Image 1: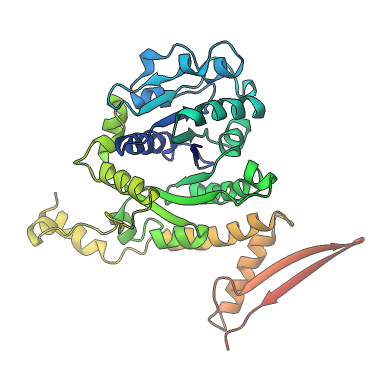
Image 2 (image 1 turned 90 degrees about the vertical axis):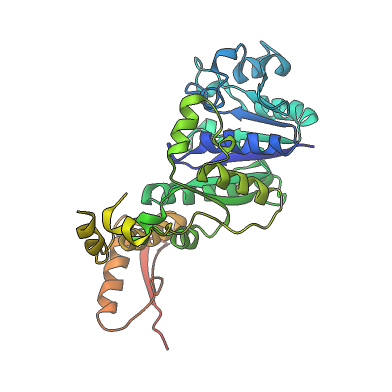
Length: 269
Length: 82
């Protein structure tokens, strides 16, 4: 049986799709058969971030409505044989998804794959609640910023009440906090919520901290999950996060301001 | 100019502390799921007044509204440090 992970946040633009792409690629790189599903019907973007936008033929909605089978809709990643992408429909709206339809597709995928990563849309509407409904684990993506933290808190509440596990009185969804766009410099200057503050407010287990990094935009520009940029701090932080998800105990990195030399401090740069 | 920035940097009192305080109040309110909209501000103000006299934690003041038949009961709980 596959493990189903939802990447969620409530607020838009905090890095759900970036995280879904990096996390799924990371799992595939460790040898796990992984599929990543875009639940953002009407505003699909995962295909772009994964760099397979020109290979979309059938989509999630086609499969749910029986116009294609799941094998026809899956796109095989060209870089990693373990990774597949199920794109969202760009032309339909979220009502095209149904709880039974999503359940059936996940069940079919569960026979083939070890991990199913669900990239949730922003908001708390149907697409987002369906993305989390069948989840075993949730990664709550949060920026160190007031509206993102508040929305994440709201999402945590919804996770614990509106899921299959909650409705069937099973063990709850395992929830993890992923802080993205973290800037130690701004935290040190007192301009940004510190990691400890975010953790204190949300009280979730921290699975990773992704530092603010130019490599994230570079990666999405070129359609390559940022985890493949091994040189970048963001890529390394995502790799650490995958390891922690798989049970490794790693210290968090990139939390402190890198010390500049005296000359560097005096003359900038 | 970098030299100036270096000295200036030290004394910036950032906005992060304000963000944290606002969030703590807001999140506590969201979790209770309702009550009148002025409750968080009321709680915030009461906390401020108490802090003029005693140093208390952020969560020292809890404000609660209960419906009891036709009556609304405002329950205010203040925990003072021992």
